Image (cartoon, helix red, strand yellow):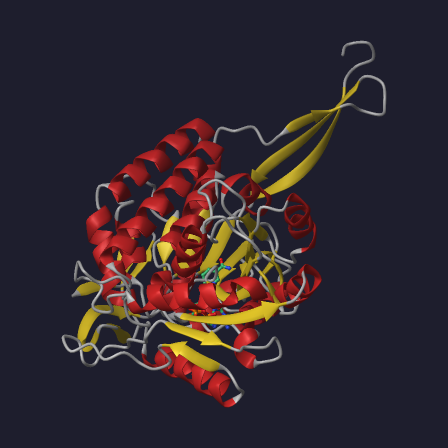
Length: 483
Ligand code: NAD
């Protein structure tokens, strides 16, 4: 059993907190972690120690900061298997996926450690004689980070590494369903990073709200649902704190033509069902040309029926459970209402019976046919292993269906027609655009969404600097004739 309190100024503290536990979604009678919520008094201590730690960190030469962040990442890497196990036990995904998540988090973070010494400043020609203009950057200050349960290592580290490399302190509130791995990565900082720079607070929405609206917070980075994102946007507005929101998606693959349908469907199905479909970048709509419709349905059905559903710690498992009973009800509800509205179940369509784990929150990988764009299942974020198949007559209609949702996170086009590829790059209303592959992003590419999928600077790679630093325009007047 994992046991963690709040990490405040380098010490694990519990005063004034209430106990809460986490469960294994493969066998919910098994308690996995025991934690205490963070009291208002401890949150206050976290905020004041973050300010002091940040001032000293900012004064440190950036190369030294980058070296310490690198050493910290080495300490996390040395604990990869322990961290991945905590992810699987609390979140449910297969252990191999948890190891993959930890590896990806570290690769993204190593790029960020290098950001400490990359020059983000510039010299700009001046309008006036004997003048030189500089554009400088400084750390933003104290960052509040609030993260969801689906990527319990990747999302926290995607915020911690750039915050630290760019000279900030960070207070992280992980999801109360999956805090163990965030606590393990915070523990790995002991003896490497100065205390107070990375702190962990625990609780649900109420604590998250108290954190993000606090006047000592200089920037709020949030990953989660659009609904919570709206609340956080309003809360951060009270102090006009800088904001970066990464929200939900209703991602689609348009399959127009392909010379390798097997490879195409492997990519689409993988993007749909990894993490049991509980990914913001999961493909949940397949928009297919009529001549490929039958072949696509058959190929998706075969892939769904080949899945081994079970406990993520079993080596044979390819599809784990949904995270909790609420998520199982939610996914079941979407599918039942889709069927009532006229969708046809090609395969799946119900919770899965797993004899070795009879109480787990498993749902069968599901393919729905005869879905039309107006149905709820074609518009809302399902967050489960459910693929809706829609057809189109011409490419204009495909683009209309693709864009006819509130979200704009990621999208795929399968085609070898350069004219259609060009149109997709111009017309897909999404932050991320993939041609002839699924929606898994690279470790150094800007990551984010438009419309109701995101607000503010993208994270990952070079974009993060725009959130984690402030910009300063400096005008230097020299004595006449000295420049
Ligand atoms: P959620 O919005 O319910 O919760 C996310 C976090 O916000 C949790 O830590 C929660 O405790 C906290 N929270 C809740 N109410 C709050 C409030 N009023 N103020 C401050 N914090 C509050 O999301 P979830 O169910 O944990 O995660 C699933 C969602 O996350 C999906 O919509 C998914 O698409 C999205 N997501 C997006 C990305 C991305 O990068 N775009 C990545 C992963 C997940």
